[in-house]
Length: 341
Image (cartoon, rainbow, N blue to C red; front, side, top):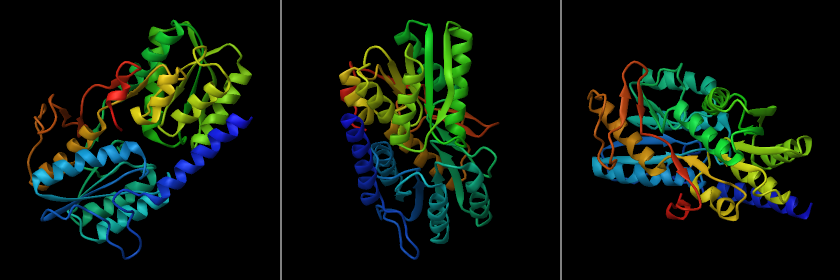
């Protein structure tokens, strides 16, 4: 129990730190968010949660690209995953006259009206990292396709499980479309490629790391023969891995998921996680700012655009207005120390 309490305390401390270290500054009422101040056109990105390694890495790539394109870049987001606060921040940026705004929606339903209002004012609006497909967004800068992400994480967990046995899924909020799509694609891959595997306990939905830890504990308690766990959002990854570590089941219960290398590294190196699946996060920031600039300049985006700062061409689907960065990346003991996000 002492280890479990320590894990929860560490999680709460991390969230307190996030609340105190919002990158770019979440604009308060009447306040201007921080930017690099180096360009004539102001563009912004509204993240899901600021002060975490993932979105700090996104900002690194976005900042560099904004400077190279002569743009002034701002990044802001809620201190915790709060959809209402995210909409407030988005609306504040609209009121401050930003020329283009990208957003990673926590809840598309609540964000859709705000996007529509911004578009009526002539502001360029795109989604990035997570989508609001039924909104009036002009483009979705996607890290990798849902099918590729779901298949990759399932392949990773299946490899560690030997292709058979019971596994569990610990996801994020039940109404987060991006997470639900990844889970659906992972299950589709399991049913077609690994019929000897069985999902137990349904999909467990969580709001934070502490809840993810508890759900993983409950799954292992209810299923002593559990062989694998998939942690979907980055907030679930440390909770699920900590639960396996606390139970002394590292190497017995395989864990993979969608955590940044920095978030997962300790657990991957200790053996509590077999791998983590993600993408090149700074490059997603590059792609997002580049896309906003293209739309601001009224340029059409080709099917295989060459984006400065990204080695391989991206892929654009004009029908769905989706701009895909590339295939997922898999981080294991052999390479995870090379990435600082």
